[in-house]
Image 1: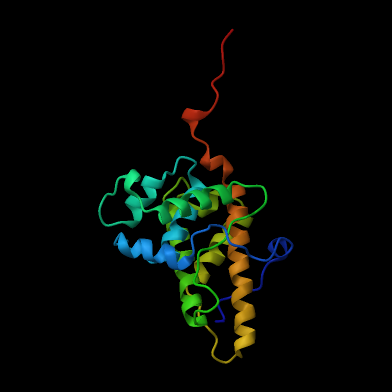
Image 2 (image 1 turned 45 degrees about the horizontal axis):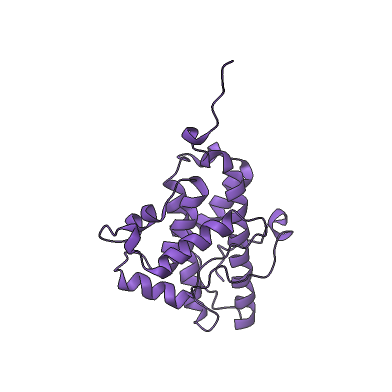
Length: 207
């Protein structure tokens, strides 16, 4: 991988685990649904946008995501099943206690160059979705969260290091994907306060 990739920090390395499927919808099915709906971004960027927005907004709806990624307004009821399933699975995985979140990326049969480009697009979409919420200044969050977002910004420029052998590049790619996956989950936890909707907060009762 390119020199922009850094080592996985210790606070994330302790939480690394093997990735697993988050949704019954495959990457190919997701891409096909986006293509049929004439979506503006590719699959990785569209999913990254969804994950980023869900990290900062508890009220981010399926329809909000569709408005963001489709060229024309599509009623929520008319959303393709694959997009609906990805939305629900992502929302549920981010809020679950078993850390079931995963990035929607091309499978291992795809060329490493394609998977690497997809990872960069995913992080680009995530930062875009994150910016759609209530965090105008990265400095307003903890230093750990700020560091993760800076690392994600670097990963948008990730590339394959042609000087390394295939096995080394594959290992580096897997590590960075895991870095991003765990980083998203930590950001989701960090930003819990930002996701609170004041209108839904319990009101104090005068006696």
